[in-house]
Length: 265
Image 1 (spheres, one colour):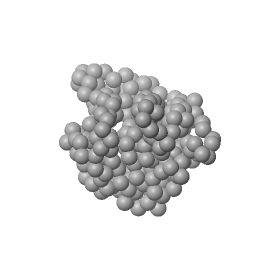
Image 2 (cartoon, rainbow, N blue to C red):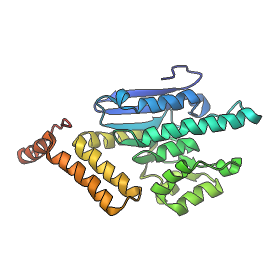
Image 3 (cartoon, helix red, strand yellow):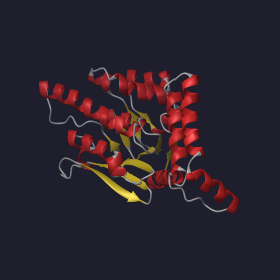
């Protein structure tokens, strides 16, 4: 991970079975430089997560989740090259969020623009602080956004909401984002991370095989796979769950009126 304060950092902290990953570059609106994008992807790898069962992704401070890819101090051809390089690294970071082996909850503690909002859209769900502003400005800057990124918005919020965001380029507030399905909940900024961690802890308390299986089925349905293929995916996960130690523990805990202790085996 990058540890230069000037370049910004990706911080990862343990909270039991939850990892809190923070984009920390407050002096530049938590913008993501190349090293930070690479570090974010690394922080969400199976090796880095170890025994974590859920992740909360947020930004440092109380003003910005992230201003997106850092394009300051660039001009002319250098700016064009930076855009292309940033898009590639951004795509890898968003893919790491989307493909994270455990659920990722994005806690938008402040403004989220451009590629940072795409990264948030790759998470399993999103909470936003009241007063946060979200926007996709590429049309205002004259470039066409990558298809993979637009697909993430369409998958979550549908075509009309995606058109509103991308074709106007206008920022929207957190409440409007909730209305169009971009975020799940709008909460007070002071409670945001605690509520996101509470969600993550609720996920972490459940059977890891059950969570992974239902997550895979939901993603398959979102991606529009044929019903028969979705059923096959579901059946593979169901058989794995039925053969696991976790289902025995879950049923035993239910009978004994106690919390289960799942191992993922």
